[in-house]
Length: 147
Length: 228
Image 1 (cartoon, rainbow over the protein chains, first blue to last red):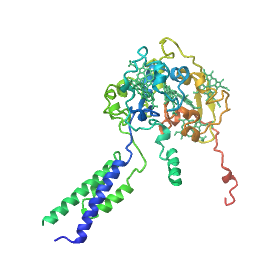
Image 2: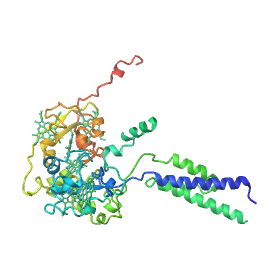
Image 3: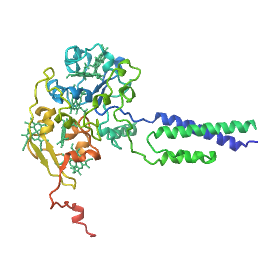
Image 4: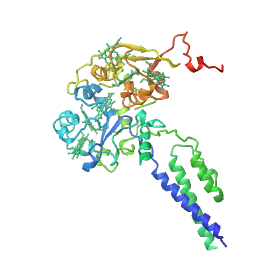
């Protein structure tokens, strides 16, 4: 024979297990992308494209920082250059090289637009992001308090 | 009897789910959840072990140079992702470090293992390198900071730093670690693209030993302490 209490406990334990299991999947898992990869997603998601991913490590093997950040005018700010496809095909930003002359041409959409959909613009592996108490969390907290 | 079987199997299912949950939230922690086998205390044990796991905040990256399809920011569903070069393939033969890209970019350049272009289309153009060290004495016990222009002007133009980030005059800029960690001053690049700020990299910047007679400055609160 099985008691009512026993059955209730069984039910609770099962529910508890399921809840913990679901919560576990909702927890952010640490991404392991290469240090200094930049995800750029000001507009891409909204236009139905995957976010663009820019690998610094790959480009710095081929170019010094000066080429992009002094000559081509890339500002030191992820997402801060308001890059779009119109500028790229005019030969600005990525288009200064991805033009079929210095590097492969712009029709290779999915080489650049390779990010997981929904990933926000960010700098991967940055020290700020890796702090145990990242400063940007505070902003979320104030937002929640205000509501 | 049948009911009891159902009970046992549902308990077993819950147990497995809980273990799975604890395990998947702590992918890098040393897992000890197998110590509890009695289904009666399991609920409490699972509860306690999620709150009191050994490392609550330590995050270790297992594979720092993961290939694009496994790195968590590239979409493996995207055909282009599989054409991208895995970092490890490109890093073969380059000098290593214990942080950032795990590559010593300065040494790689000095050794001639890399020849990145200084001009977009001219592979023969050479940088304008300036060898000028700026020593910044630090009030704290850590070694003083040496800012080397040489390593920086190998990669960057003067206009990348002067005057937007630093006024070009020794001692004219207020710099401290909080600003650096928030991504200002040296932190515009260090912690983003150039080597990051971590226990193993402090000495790269803090490289000049303190003078033998150096004594730590005492804080006001200590000097004026009425209870001393």
